[in-house]
Length: 301
Image (tube, rainbow, N blue to C red; front, side, top):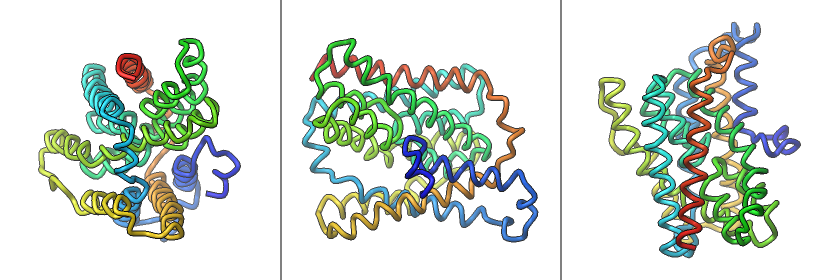
């Protein structure tokens, strides 16, 4: 988290994942404390997803209106299922494809961590999906504001486009800051509208995970219920400003700690060189998210 304050575009989750991978590929990996961390890693990630719900006041999201809600829901739906279709046709691992679809359509690394619980993907695929989210989302920080200017979009349209298409919340904030001072609230609200869809997206991904793994996961696990309860708590304004500020830091801390645990299961030789088909899928998913949201914004806003 300290390192990410110096490099905010990278984000603490990717940094933690990289640090875990470094530890796994050095002599440190042989230490007893590095063994048997899988259950703890999952618990940390699940708790982080629960607290993520405290960032989502439903009343603010509803303020974007029916047109804005339609843009968010349709963009998420089209991006997710298009990514699944393209990924399967490219012959990629079903778990990796599901992780990438969730990350690119919902909220980046946090969505990947949540959905990983049901698809049971290999840790190298988790790392690859997080890396793709980071690389392509970072590129969109500059591309979306520039293209918005070229296309003649208003500041509000450009901000909404950033929120509806860019992968990570932090990346949306960075892009909105480039667009203009009035863009931050619009872009962030649009992005949070996508994050709210994490729970139903988990249910969809779990059905695909069941088919791939040959077993059935709980339709609504405890941490998804916790996420929904946290959204309700925030929406009812039951917590003080101080408590919300603490929860924001705790959310990032828990997710980053869980990502470190995922990183400890990664061997560099397993994800490098980068598979061409994985890169092509990330390109396609980004284009679908950006193109679908842009077309809808121009049409309804």
